[in-house]
Image (cartoon, one colour):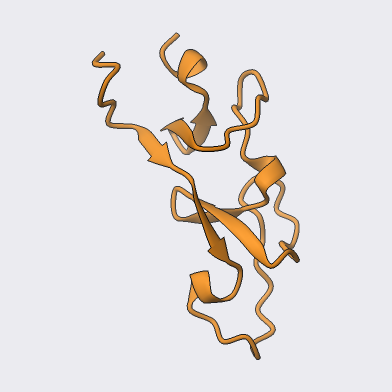
Length: 86
């Protein structure tokens, strides 16, 4: 595997809860976290793999470390670099 440019590397981006989903501020759409499936009530959310997440829910599925800037994915699951390349 090429460690420099893995095809499964994912950027984590911060977005506003409503504007990130193209919903007006007047809308009452409930945004659910892809990790815990609970509502995201914060003003900001993390957009990972085109899904909304609480910041605390963006964790490696193996070691549970928080993923703050970059993560890796396989089969829809998030991994830290170390666990992804095991």
